[in-house]
Length: 134
Image (tube, rainbow, N blue to C red):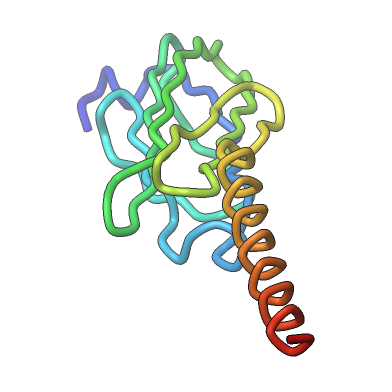
């Protein structure tokens, strides 16, 4: 660390990764601040950053990379900036990131899938009942 970077003013990004290993993904989403990887965990964590502009990139990983989201923010010296990330409910959607709590993307697709499964179940039951009556 150079003398200049040691004296550079710092701020804080208070990152909240919504969800948990039970409700989102066993693998914690990845974070890069200004291109540099930063270790993360579910929940809220304070990340010290250099004051000034900062670019955050987040994504989730399972069988493929998904849930990509990015945000730019400017942090003043000593300031705390809150950032919230929500990974999607399935691997074919982008994530949400913002300065307030974020909704989880992909709910419409999940509801359509559950509706389709319920319809199939109803058709099977109707078929079995009709077969039993004949």
